[in-house]
Length: 198
Length: 330
Image 1: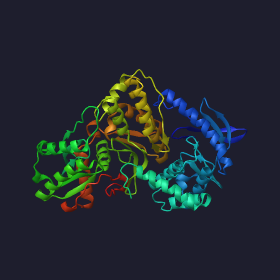
Image 2: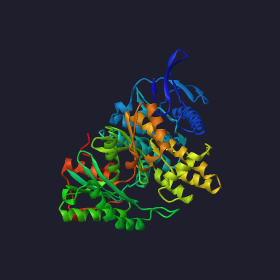
Image 3: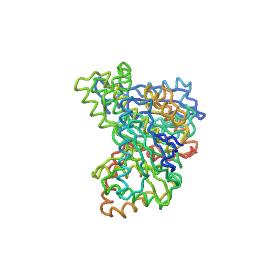
Image 4: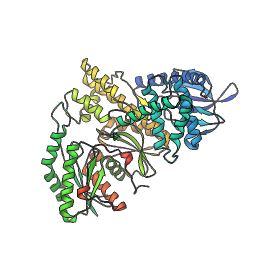
């Protein structure tokens, strides 16, 4: 169905319903040892985090089957439009809420980007391959910085994207905590190459 | 229209004459060589540039078969880079522009890498991987600027290679020596930290880990091999993610580390998977050079007619590429 950055997506049938098989195919350019370790690790993590994210209140596809050796996950097929294409300020607000809900449960998504959200009746979050547990402000801020980078590169025309995201985030996390995390985001940005210290 | 470009951000002092259609009439350089086991000392490098300046300049005019009278504009790299080095190029450019009454154009060094690379490879709308001692960035052009889609969160891949190379006793730049050693390895891979955060990468932990391996007496060939395999796979993955996200059908690699064959090979495979075409900046122009400055200055000047008064000209050690307006590119 689609070739993603690290996995191939196939449309399959599971229990008579439409489902998706996500297979992390080997990357021939990567050293074989490194490659298989990464693929296995991410597959297992992704399946786990998709379930724990649900408990945090975030909508994710239902996982049917996991094969760590083949690095395959079979999950529900999600109807809807990819947010990378159909981005709106309101969706950004909703994305901010999702991020805050994950963070409240010490889950760092690790790859918060618009292409990992699907707008259905509810917003659906995908791709937990880089997720991990952490309570460190630095890790929360890294997550936020990534989506900010996506907004300011791919979605530069959507001027309200990041402010709306922050509003959504603060609606769950509270203003005080949000400001503290944003302060850390600035710190990370200033650590960037050739950033002006302001 | 002819432009004289002066480059002096780091170890290279370069002068080049470029014509407005993109013909590089001359490209002369003198490169500061650091002592074995050490990096670029800004003071020593700037002293080298001062001593090399007049000879490189004279030779660049001579090779192009022109004199200062034929030059229409003078471009100089105004940053980002090492302050003392940048100042040498700026002083040379100011002097020439002032004395010969030529328009003076400041150029962002990183933009120079991208613009010259695009011109030489004929890439029209590429995703760009800029890899050098100063930069590790994934960029694409959108709405008047090169936008950053991914970058390093700490040190650059060039710094990673240089700093590790120095512990092995090499002098910066060490990429070439590390590549030679890696090729001699039997392919024994030692596990090292592999850090990809979305489209971003982080190399500092990798540097610590590989330095530790070397101090424990692991063969240099094997550490170099494992280092390259890990660092370049991280870059290739970040590139693949950005390609998949942006849907770009062209991918270009520029900067000093673009000279590495193993990196190009991995990116070739990554591009193949995503159905994109890889453009590699010709080896001769991958590293720092005056032509990148001249070519960017000439486009900038032709489109905006903007020049800077000698007394207002500047250098900036920190100057991010995503803050530069690029009006001539659509």
